[in-house]
Length: 324
Image (cartoon, rainbow, N blue to C red; front, top):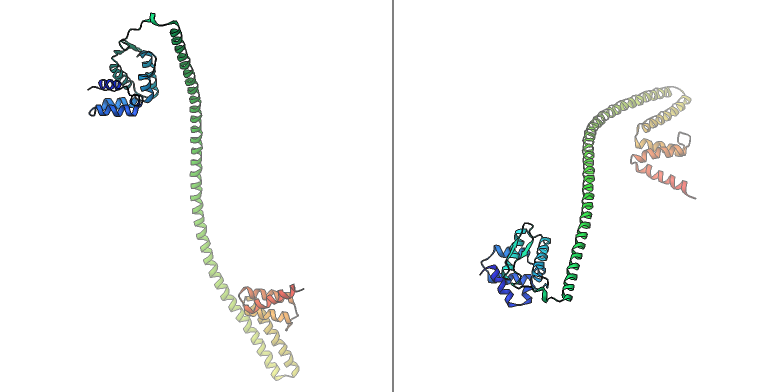
């Protein structure tokens, strides 16, 4: 059984549930032709409910139906070869002999093997047929007009898309160039930072060495000053031993003065305990003129270095200042 014979057999059933349903129609064909694959695939590529409706239910002449079917299949994107195969298969099933001319227009040599007798067509039927054709022509013209407008709009959209794509490429190239420049700057900055950090670390090391040397020198200097004061003190003590009480009293004053100088020296050097003791002297006027501002100053210096007693006394000072 050929494809055309199978189609003719399905037509003879006169079952609209099959004839107007492309899915069921193809399933029936596969049942009739289980070994046929290539031809059925060609039919399946183009057969739709609309095509079946034009073949089996449209009231127009077959030549007009064929023209409509070809137009529908072309809109569906079916290839010319596949369109010809579909039309030829159905034409054979309808016992029609169809061929193509140079312009690919289908010429109906036999239309259902029926001879149309125009004399039997009434005037009203002819007018209705003409009106139908005029309406079809208007619809075709409207479709062409809409297609042209759609084509123009598509062209405009395409030009806009191309311009946007061009703008995006320009922006992308600009951003890429800026990115490369930033990466170069970042690389140079990283190298500069590394070099700077190396110099800073070197300077820190040198500064630590200088601090150590300064500390050693300061220690030696303080020791020398203290030794000089002790020698001076011993000298005056020796004088006090061999002289009168008046000299001895002045020696005691000198001793107190030397001890105060030593305390100030150690406090300036940064010893927190000496700073705390010097603050006490200023707060209570022991050996110095009472001066609360200087007391607070030395309390602060000792407190910053973690001296708990200085921190406590400083807190008391602030509480007394803020008390109403």
